[in-house]
Image (cartoon, protein in one colour):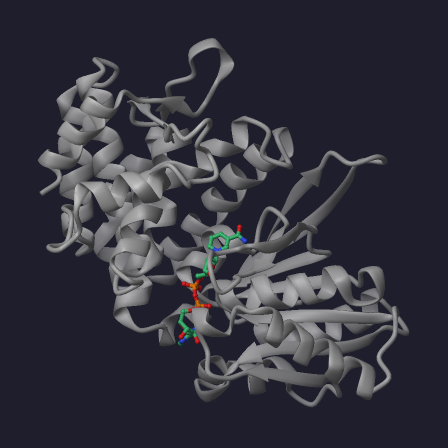
Length: 369
Ligand SMILES: NC(=O)c1ccc[n+]([C@@H]2O[C@H](COP(=O)([O-])OP(=O)(O)OC[C@H]3O[C@@H](n4cnc5c(N)ncnc54)[C@H](O)[C@@H]3O)[C@@H](O)[C@H]2O)c1
């Protein structure tokens, strides 16, 4: 594969401990299938992608002249993250007589990665999956960590599994075609990683935001490396989210509630941005973090062009109801990951998600309006 590829290793603490490589570079797409063919001689390659990724030419670049089966999810987007799509992929594989010697390659955003990863996890009790993420969400977050799954009619990620990829390829050049709103909203996952783990990374994002927004490849490579290192480390230390991994849900308690209450009019990252500001307000009220933390965060989010206050028409009652259904809630009480400082999560008694009194939560929601 071309020069300039940076390879990181993500460790998985299973027995025996395994690991997978994450290859990061510019213009990697065209060499991936040949490299897989060499590395896994005799495997049959099958690529899952979506209509937009194909329309922008990334599927053709990936396939080149390599023979491989394809399945294109259409329409693209969250509405296709369903068991019906998984069933269609599995039926296609069966019809074409794919077996356990199949290597499934997921080329696309978080939806393609989650759907294809889940199909791979269950097809004939599991075949390996290669993740090739093409959005800011997927490159920073969803392609790493082994969570795969699909939504039910009632809730997000109702069906799912922990199933780690065999390898991940991050080609930051693919981000050039992503629309501006998805691009910016997905950068929230990078801001989240900086806030929970690395003050120096936050400084970098702050100082280089203009380059990042201009999609400068050197800056995007730096982001990819920090994101993989941070998420890989958290996942290694708590692969199945018994405690530490919850830090990755920073901003998500209010964020998920707002996303759902907005009827998904807000992109996930936009809702999480509001949730991050809410978590900063709560930490301030609890005397855990200084006001300067929130002011710096809000200033960065404003420059990113994402919302920092609740949208009109979303009531406190609605948000409280949704938050008590959050996966981190215990006994109907919502729980929050909170910061003490940029790069440092509050962890009383070793717990990373803590209950917050309702009056304090309501007052924080009031300040989010
Ligand atoms: N598994 C995890 O750990 C994890 C973590 C975070 C998010 N997620 C999931 O990820 C999903 C959101 O991810 P997403 O924002 O990438 O959504 P997405 O896959 O729907 O992609 C967003 C849009 O961009 C298009 N697109 C993708 N790549 C493109 C490119 N290079 N150029 C132009 N258009 C492109 C897609 O077709 C889609 O319309 C949600 O379902 C969320 O639950 C999963």
